[in-house]
Image (cartoon, rainbow, N blue to C red; front, side):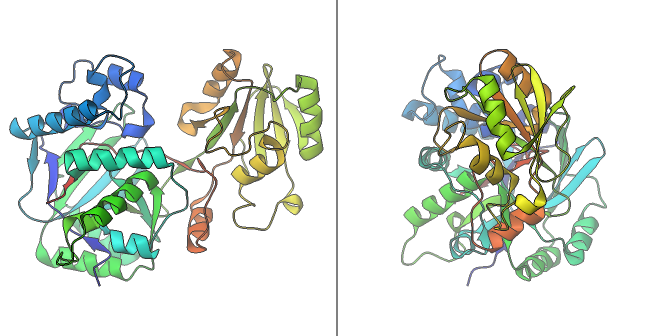
Length: 411
């Protein structure tokens, strides 16, 4: 049986090139935002993860020439030694620091077999078109370039091992556009590598926190490449991940905006909402501070919505705040049947703040906005352990892992 995790030979920048390469994850910026971010940065990894930015605006991101350009750009960075391939299979300690928040995890490759068997646990469904896009990206590059953010239940043994690895200066550090400092240490001493494999093998599970499409795509690529005589530890049978202890991850709110009021006027909607929640006008916007509390921005005004604990469903999934809002308001009042596919709803990460919700509504782009209390890691792990799925866009993790600092080549 293959091990849960495996060391790998990373494709990575060096100490003097990391700042030139570092980029946000491909799926947190639009093409327009990516075009601005690469201005004056010829080596930005966005030229590999979002290569459509090198084509005229409006070029389809999933076209053959776009994928080919990404592969060309990756090959160029290797040829010019902006990126280099480690010769020895290693783990990598990955630390992110944003102001006072610090989280330290292990960059590794996780077993596709464990993912398929439910030991690497998911909590969200994927969109077929987005999953296919990641498959084509992996195939065109012959590499996994966007790490999956995973969590594990915090263990003192792993913390001690990682702590010992960071007693020396990092391999390199780089800061992203959001002021997050990313630091990487290489772990290649055989005894430490073996100890980390053994410590992770004791875990009941890894939990996918962010990166369901990347992990699903990696599993599809693995299935397509399997051969009868293939070794169980083939590189394609593992996917690039960074695993953090659950008590260090920070989940922010993932808020909702809806384009119209489903034919209702403002007074009618307020009257309906007051039947489903305790409704209270607010002098200014305040983020919800507890489970069962929501904030609504409508027609230039903020409202506090509360659902008492006695009224919340006891079911693991239906009791989540994202489910409560969907079942009691978005679907019955605003007609949002399936938030995965309905074009009338959009999602705004909490890192953008309440001002972004106000801006979206005041501009006329959307008619109403909802701020939620963040889902907790305990809720995420409980849902995953039960083999259930959360509604889409239930969690927003911050800070985000960077693209370009560690890639997994499929040998």
